[in-house]
Image 1: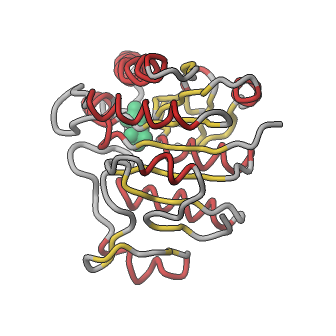
Image 2: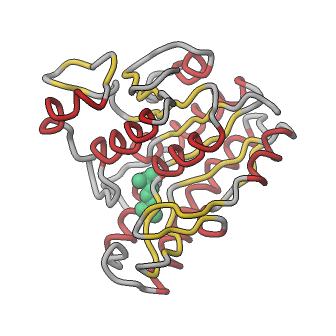
Length: 252
Ligand code: IP8
């Protein structure tokens, strides 16, 4: 089986989170070009930014089931996914979209089941599966939101990748103005009051939600990096094994 690396790019890098469905095409294309240079073994997950959070909030999906809300929120994130997939293809990569709504089941907002075999086969054939934060059916609530971070943590738990890296619009986990080189679970009480919410509408919890997912993953021995994906060239370096930004727990 091919060595797997999981890269997530946050919605705040790919979109303007304050303006409904506004993609930052220059950033999407730059990132696609960096990924295309990288080669095989990669699973890409991206956040929703202004393509999903605004719809999820409008339909109040976290509180109330709405079939129309499921459709509209999903269609919105698929529009962003199309842009990412097409940019990767234009840059010379071999991407395919993988929509969590069709292969993931939640219970109480957490992934209970996810079909990962097709994703593994894609990677083995040199394809880059491109997943995204999405709405998904939830056994207890009807429907819920599955963030890109939760998808990363679920995939990493079952696939035990070589590298797990999460690109955001900030330099890492910031405490008192400084980027922390490393965060472990025991640091959480000290830093949690300073963990910011995301800019713009975010139904999945910004940096606090991200760190929660990554510390759970670290508890199972899988470490990850939170880095600034807005810095040109950094994706290639991180995928090559450089420890940029903040390392979260576990072993890398
Ligand atoms: O941007 C959220 O995914 P995230 C997905 O990765 C939706 O938190 C539909 C709001």
